Image (cartoon, rainbow, N blue to C red; front, side, top):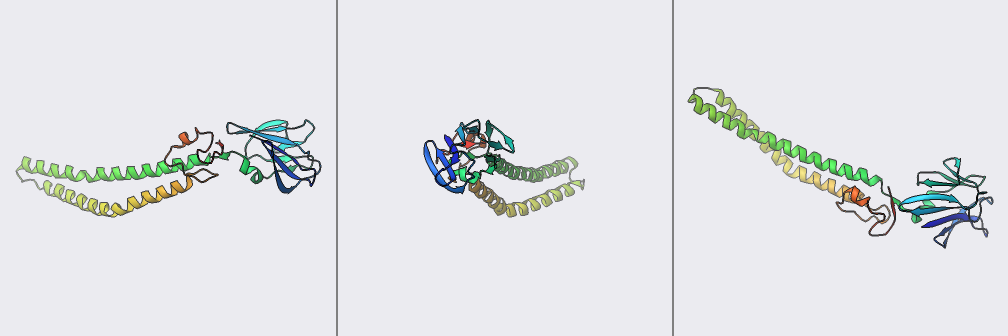
Length: 222
């Protein structure tokens, strides 16, 4: 894709020529900006800015340039008056930045992993009930019931079992509800920035392998 930025000589407004098709805007430009001032070449998810004429003044982040790889985070200024181009005007024609989806995916994985770890720790603690019970039985048989330590072991086993039952009862609704909240938040945010179509449960590294959205065909950068 190629987008030529320039001034409409009929009314001095910003004119975009997107792959040969003119796109008019209502943005007024200074007269020192050329009809074909510079162009953005978009290929493989990267944006390359190139001056259309060596005599044109084009700035990127305050530095005058002839050509440069840029991103939507950079500041583009045209002409000797250094008119700033608003990226919002270019957004419909540019690749969609999906770099923020990595953080969304990482948070989703970490939150699910945290729930799994909590469940496994709880199951490990609950399994201690059986261990204390077995120790109490062994001690009972070994001493013929003459050692009172087995009472303590039985009591500990009963205590752990009671606490485990109460926690399991509470978590029986709490954890599934939390999983549902995490899932809904993830599906709402893990979407194409342009068409808002969800990427499902595809890991970010798989999504990032695509050069464009499989649904709206918008090109990706990350």
